[in-house]
Length: 189
Ligand code: PAN
Ligand code: ZN
Image 1 (cartoon, rainbow, N blue to C red):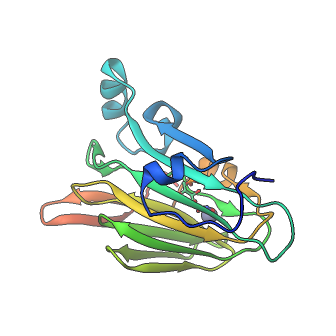
Image 2: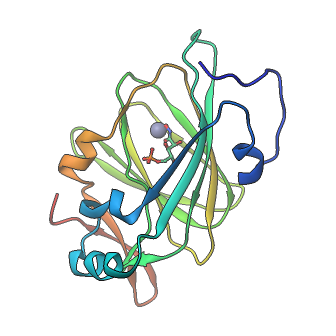
Image 3: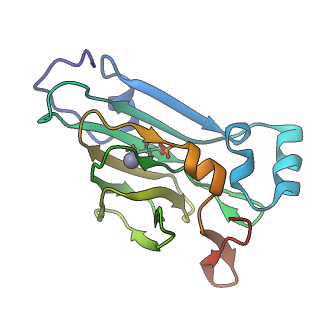
């Protein structure tokens, strides 16, 4: 149970979320995400010198009544590992629960997959929203030159399943092409 005092208002800025009482702060560095990237040579080269932060998120997870809402702000730093853009780990929601993403700033792609292997990629643009139906794993990719910042809102009591994505990967990847980002098949999944 979070210790945020309700009701409240705040701005869609990392500083505002960081200072929320009871906020959970998660920082993911390259060393936390080694198997996610296709170019393992590039991973090794970067880690030999540095362990960059790929993304951070600040969340309030609600575990009380069914009417509550959990929410968080994610900031994915711009950049690539080899030719593959920075992205989140990605997860399924164990108990069915939909989610809404609202893009504050930056550009990206939201990758989705079902447990049966169906995939989608949705564009993320400033002011845009994406709806993630329960049952679809979701991973966010920053394809722009600036931070990708987005708000996410999901139901309470949702367990996040990272293991399935970590084990099998995503069937699609987002790589830098000659004319911008390209969604390609992941031949390692
Ligand atoms: C989001 C994600 C957040 C970070 O709040 O948790 O963007 O991504 P990973 O959790 O995959 O590391 C969300 O989808 N919550 O359910
Ligand atoms: Zn989620």
